Length: 165
Image 1 (cartoon, rainbow, N blue to C red):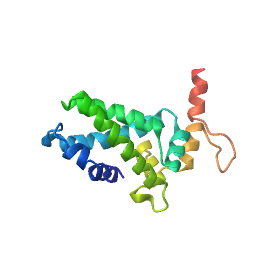
Image 2: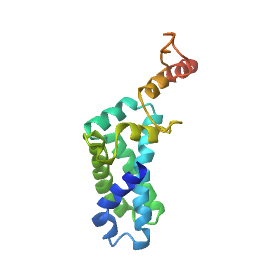
Image 3: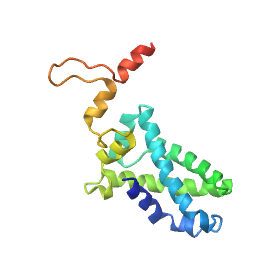
Image 4: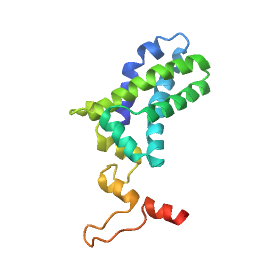
């Protein structure tokens, strides 16, 4: 899945990155990797921040404003670290990241998946032990009922929040 995202960036970066005189040719590959890495980092941040419902809604509707904002900011910072001018970095980020995220989520929401699917995206981003993501993973974050006994299992997000308060 991550390879597909990087290829999506590569397929759409020709004009903004490769043909851009403000981006040295030797930095093209690093810029492409920074774009896909920033999107992945943003998705992981959304999940770790507990924004699962927003993530699922974004995936199903083909858009993700907070993912775009976070990824664009992260990407712009990475370009600055590569020595790319701040204005150039902002222009590339403002154009490339929203386009890639839109295509990424549209592919995930479409019936053929466009190389992406919900379970793969959430599984890879969530970093589940089995590499898959299903409703049990979501329920496990909040504590879920044991299928056999019907009793609430501990250790979920709600238990952790209760411990804080």
